[in-house]
Image 1 (spheres, rainbow, N blue to C red):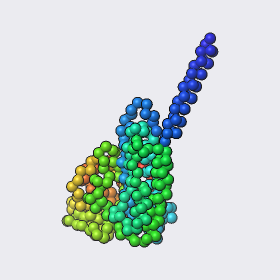
Image 2: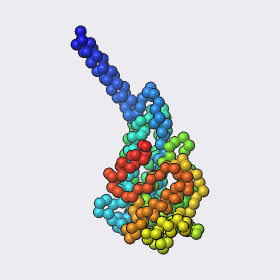
Image 3: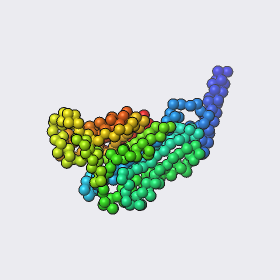
Image 4: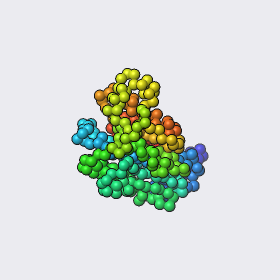
Length: 305
């Protein structure tokens, strides 16, 4: 009798497992491996992502001016972007279909004069809601973010017309309109070597400026062991923008300090972190350039944390 009961229990468990797998397959066939609508709510269901990616298309990406044997910097950027989109889709896969409200976009500042680059960037703007979510749009996001970023960099390099990157003005004029939505978790990921410069945006007030270049760091004597004291006492930094960005999280990837100054990375970090804190940004991370495979964990934890 005990053996019969055991067999009955095994058969019952097997039936439940088979039924569960069938239900999961049904959800996949409806679009993506999403959480079924009849499951109870969990905290992550309200984690609607609004991911913005800001590219620095200055000469830092030039394989001629800044060659790198391990991996060219523009290829690293493309790898970072591919990981960002993969994590974005991974987060989306945990959501109920009726709760889908996600966005991922890519920006430049200033906009490139090459219309082909701008057209490609438009193909990287996606808003996913319960009304349009499907396997087709998921596949489109994956394919687009695997191919178009590399094409954008290759076009920019071929143009060989690097006007710089005006990240400061992007924050001043656009970040609130472009990167922040009240009903979403707003994340801005900036791909940059840490320096900011644009020929039409060279503002300076005292020791505050809208730009940062190695020459200025040396000129301001921030290349000695006393750099921190000098930085704080003389109030060096980016020009303050009186704005509250407390509902924006920022991840800066690709910092590539001038090797002539052993303190350069620390100075760059201090400029950016001081600026972010003045804009009331509560959560940010600033990371030096590395191979995409090594950066995968950092990107994943920042977005999914």
